[in-house]
Image 1: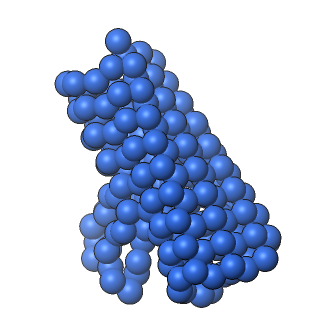
Image 2 (image 1 turned 90 degrees about the horizontal axis):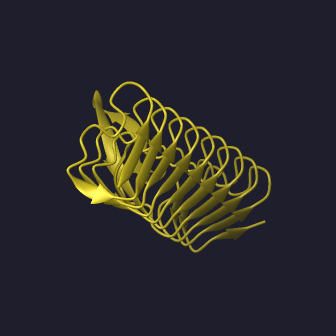
Image 3 (image 1 turned 135 degrees about the horizontal axis):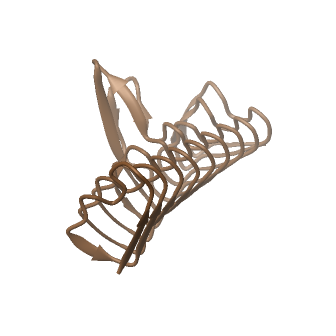
Length: 173
C-alpha cells in the first residue's frame, strides 16, 4: 500500500514499492521503486527515483536526492543536494544521513573544485545551514557549523565552527 495526498504529481511515477507516504504538492513525484519512505511537505523527496527508509519533513527536504537509503531530513531544504554546474542541475544521492534545521546539509556532497557530486554517507548535521557541504562520516552541530568546509571524517561543534577549510579528520569545537 502507498498513500499520496497533494496536488500536482504526488507519487505519480510509482511502479514498484510499498508503505510509502507522500503528503504535499509533488512529494515523491519521481519515485519508481521504494519502500517505507515518508515525505511531508512541498517537493519533499520530489526527485527520489529509488530509495528505501527515508524520512523528509519540510519543504524541499531531500529534494534533489534521486537515490537515497535511510536518511532523515527535517527542516526546509535539509539534505537538498542540488547544484547548478555548467548550467545543468546536478542531482545526488545520500545514505544514512541525519539533517535537522533549515538547509542543514543543503548542498552536501558538492565539490566545486572537481565540479562533481559525491555521495554523503553517515553524516549528522544539526542547526541552521550546518554541514551544508559535508561529504562522508562528518558531524556538524550548531548554526553554520561546517557550512563551508569540505572533507571527510570531520567534527564541527559550535556556531560557525570549521568554516572556510577543507581536509580530513579535523575536530573543531
